[in-house]
Image: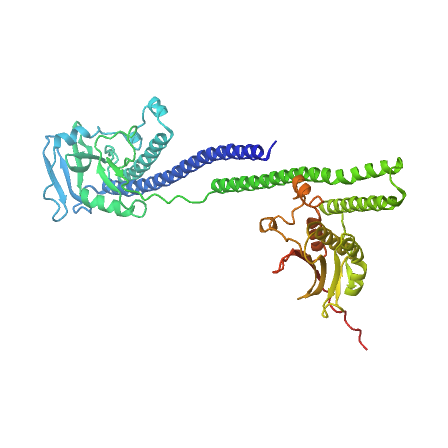
Length: 537
C-alpha cells in the first residue's frame, strides 16, 4: 500500500471512530441532562411536600383548637367571629373579634348544603378514599401525591378526634350526643369552620366560626418562605384530590409553588468525566497509531531506499570483480598490468568492506546491540589510533592530508571510543573524497581544538559544499536515492547518519558547519574528561 492510501485509510478509520464517539457522547450527555433535570424536579417536589406538611400541620392545629373552643366568648386570631344557626335557619353571632365582625355574612343555605350530617364518633377521622381503579391508572408521581394527601388528612382528623374525645370527657354530660368535627368549607369568598350539632332530639343546628382568610394565608405562607419563597395559596372549594395536586388536607385550598429557583446543574459529573477520559484515550490512541503508521511507512521507505542504493552500490564492484577475475583467469592481462588489476580489486574489496561495516554498525545501533566502549583517552593517543585509515583514504584519492592540533588540545584527555572515532573520521574523509573532487586546493584538513567542555575534530574539504536544500536531510539514513548515487559519488547514504549516532552514543555530537570561504566542514565533538583527583600526601 502506498503512503497516501495508508494515510487515507487511517484518516477514514479515525473519522468513523470519532463520529461513533460523538454520537455516543451526545446520547450520554442527553441522558445526563435528563437525570440532572429529574433530580432538580425531585428536589422541588420535596420542598413542596414539606411545605404542604407544614401548612396542614398548622391548619390542623387551628381546626383542632376551634373544635374545642368554638363557643368561647372572645375568639382568637385568625377567627373573625363565632356563630350558631338554629333549626329555623336564623343565625346569630356568638362572639366576634374587635373590628373583625363587620362584613361577616354568608349564605346559610349554601353552608348547610355543604356540611355533612352528624357523624358518629367511629366515623370521625376516616379519610375519603379515591376510586381504586382510578388510583391504579395514575402515574407514579400522582399516586405519591394522593398517598401524601391521605396521610395529611388522616393526621388532621386524628388530631381533631383526640380533641373531641377530650371535650366529650371533660365538659359533656354522659348522655350527650357525640360532637362532630369542624369542616372547612368555602361559602362565597368566606372560609368557614362549621359542624352540625344536635341540641335536642330531632332538632339540628349549626355552629362554627368565620376565618380571616387574608391573615391566615399570610401566616401560612410565612411559615414556608424558606422552602417556597414565591408560593401562594388559592381557594379550591370543589377540588378532587384524585385529579389535582398540591391540595391542602385541612382546608379546601391549593398551594401554588410559584417561581421555584432551579438548582444550578453541576458542570462536572462522573459521566462527563468518563466521556472526557474516553476522548483523551481516543486522542492518545489516534496519536499513537499515527506515530506507529508514520514509523512503519518511514521504515518501509528506508528499506526501499536501502535496497535501491545497495543494489546500485554492489553492482559496480561486483562487475569489476567479475571482469578483472575473468581477464586474469584467461591470461588476457599483460604481465606489467597484473599489479594494477590487483590494486583495483583490492580497492573495490575495501569499498565493499566499508559498506558492509557501515550497514552492520547501523543495524547494531538500531537494535541497541552496539555497545559504546568509551574510556579516558589522551588526544595524542586518540589521533595516533584513529587517523591512519582516513589519511590513507585521502591520499589514495589524490588529496593532501593535513592535521592541525591546537595548543589547548594537545594535552587534553577525552571520553571516547577510539574505534568509533576512527569510523566517524573515515566516513567523513570518505565523503570528502567522493564529493570534493576538483576542489582547489585538493586538500582535506583535520583541525583539533577545544570548544568549551568538548574536544572538536573538524574535517574540512574545498569542494562545492552542501546545497542549503539538502542540509535539512543531511543526517537521514538512506537519504540517497539510486539516481543520486548514479549521478554523484558512490555510497548508500548511511555514513553521516551512522556517524552522528556513534558520536551521540559517546556523549558528543556531529554537526555540519560550512565555512564562509566555501567547501564542506563537519565537526565531531567529544566530551573532555575531568581531571583526576590528586591523592593526599
